[in-house]
Length: 229
Figure (cartoon, rainbow, N blue to C red):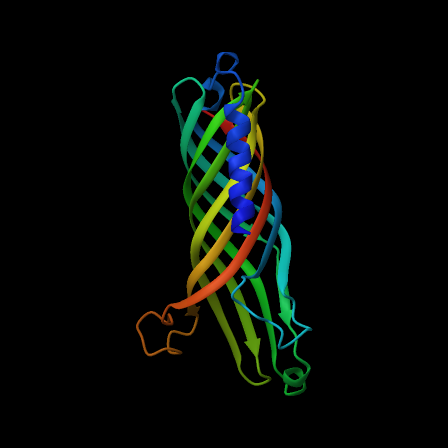
């Protein structure tokens, strides 16, 4: 997967740099911006995770992703744009943990996707009339909500995961103040912690568990509509 991401970024950069500089201008892609985002979201176990113990469990969960983003882009020369950005999204992806033996004992569990936060930077090159091709990367923190029930006791907890994100996309300036974009992004979460609603579950003041290693992949295809100021 990492090789595939590298190929996407390299192809986008090479395509943009091949466009004659004299025909382009980056003024339509600079300044502060705000945007609405929607798209497809899928989370799945990473390459280090083996889920062959139970073939009935979903090995991935997918759904509709939506949220908002903000950013600020500034010009570097005539065709290059650098920017800082932040984003908050939610997803409808969810699943039930299925295990016949546990169900016979009255155990059940549900997992749904909570909020996803991202902060990072992007670099783009004007590649055509009102068209910007860009690559991006940064830090992401995702939350997944887990509800478990053994028939007598119900346990509710959030799983907070930290990781990194890379992506590539194309942005088209519809006017001086409006734009649309199409973007693919890949996230990998490498560390996490449980945040129990019952603070007494752990012998701590916060109700949080010790941090643990994780390997969760997330793929998203997003479209956006935004305003520049």
